[in-house]
Length: 90
Image (cartoon, rainbow, N blue to C red):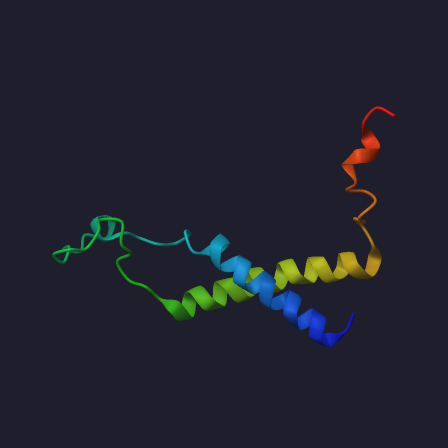
């Protein structure tokens, strides 16, 4: 695999990991006991920590990309294995 392709795929895994990681570890303002600012939704996070979020996303994205790369090298799951049309009646 070309290094540019590997980098592009890594960035896709990193961006996808944001949506996997974002809901975890967030306390809303009422749960944290913080007063609400007028106009603030009750579901708004109490403290947003972008550095911690970026670290979590990087770890998850790197693990997923590593699994993808190992599958690319060793061929654990191939396109032929995922072809559902071969399983039906002939």
